Length: 372
Ligand code: SAH
Image 1 (tube, rainbow, N blue to C red):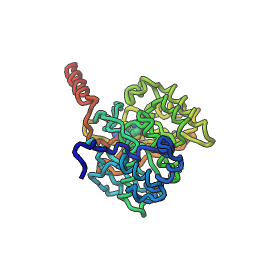
Image 2: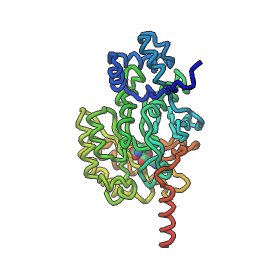
Image 3: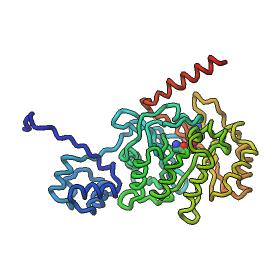
Image 4: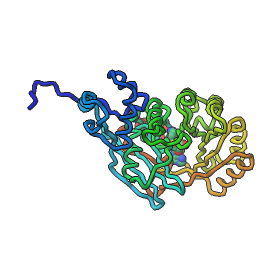
C-alpha cells in the first residue's frame, strides 16, 4: 500500500493536446526519437488503444513514463438530438462543466462535422445567438479534436465523417494555436487523414491571424462577410471596426495567392431589409472582383432575442441570380437541423459567461429603454 506521505502523482499531460509536430518535440524532450510520435498517433487514432501498457512497440520505460504522467481524454457527449433531416446535434461537456455544441450534417456523398473552437464567443455579431452567450475560454486542442473523435465513435465506422467545418461556437482564429493543431491532426495520415480541401476554417475577419494561417496551415478559408460597406459591417460584425473591409479583402487575396485555383468562400447571411438589396448585390460583385471567390448565402436563422428577419426566398434567389450572372459561383446554404436548433448561429451550449456579456447587453437595453 502507498504511504500517505508519498507525494500523489497526478497525470498532467493530455496527449490529445499535441499534433504530430508537437508530439515529436515532446518525445525529443524526453530523450526519445521523434518517430515515437507516429507510433503513438497510430495507437490512439487508428487502433483506439488508450492503455499505454498495450503499446508494445514503445520501450517499457517509456510506457511507464506515459502511464505515470500522461492521459488521453476527450470531452463527453451529454445530450444528442436528431433532427428530422438526419442532422444531429451533440451537447458536449468539457472538464470544467461548460457545454459546447457539435453538429453532424449528413448529405448526399459527404457528411460534415461542424466543430466549436471556443466556449461561447468574444465577438458580438448582432445576428448570432452564440454571441449573446458571452465568452468563457478557448477550447484546448484535445477538446477540438475530441469533438471529431467522440462524434465518429458515436456514428460508428459505417458513417464516416468526410468534412470538417470550424463553424460551431467561437472564433477559431482567436484560438489560433489550438485550432491549427487540431486541424493538423484532422489532416494527418496517421489520424483521420482528411484532405485539406475538406477542412474549412471560418473567420469573422481576424486579419493578422488570416495572414498567419495562410503561412502555417493549408486549409480552406471561409470569411463571414455579411455586408459590403464598412458602415453596415461595423454594425453586424463589430470586429470590422478593427479590421475594415479593405484590410480584410487584402488578407483574402493573400490567401488565394498561395495555390492555383484556390478560392475563398464568402459567407453572407440574408437579413431582410438590411443587406439584401440589389445595391448590396452589386456592391458584393464589385468587392469580390479581385479575389477568386465563391459565395455562400445563408438564410438567417432566427433565435428568441433576435430582431432580424430572414429575407424572403424571392429576394434570396434574385440576389443569387445577380451574383451568378456576374460569374460568381453562388450557393444558398440549406438550413439543416432547424427543429433541434442546430442551424448556423443557433448554437448556444451552456456557457459560464466570463465576459459579462449578459450584464452589458442588459445595460445597453436599459440605456436604450431610458433614451426612448
Ligand atoms: N466565428 C466564425 C465561425 C462561426 S461560423 C465566423 O464568424 O466565421 C458560423 C457562420 O454562421 C458564420 O458565417 C456566421 O456569421 C453565421 N451565422 C451566425 N449567426 C447566424 C444566424 N442566426 N443565421 C445564419 N447564419 C448565422
